[in-house]
Image (spheres, rainbow, N blue to C red):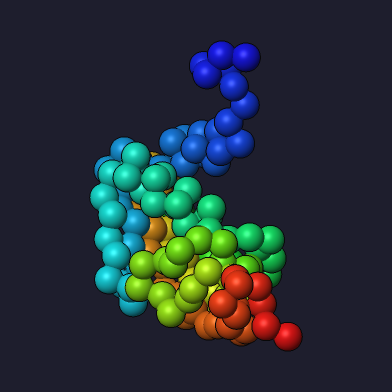
Length: 134
């Protein structure tokens, strides 16, 4: 199979963002001091963060929407599989709980900005081997 036809596990994720986000989208996480502008940069960032979340469990809390805005609150628990996420107190192997409110500002039905208000908690620290301590 050539590189051009190889299966890309992220294809649906990327296509989702390309179809729903404006090319000039702004993504931010103010508590972490992060702001990213531009569709391709936002997609790269989101793929990097998603790759760090092993066995994520999503719990929806509430969602409200209007033609101009969507507010989505959720909790995500996962084992951190990366080398850290910028602006967070987590390390490889930690069991993490992320409480987040995502605020999507819309223009003509597409996302022009996405703001994350986040609280990151380490539920269990990993030991030196990268496995969760009992």
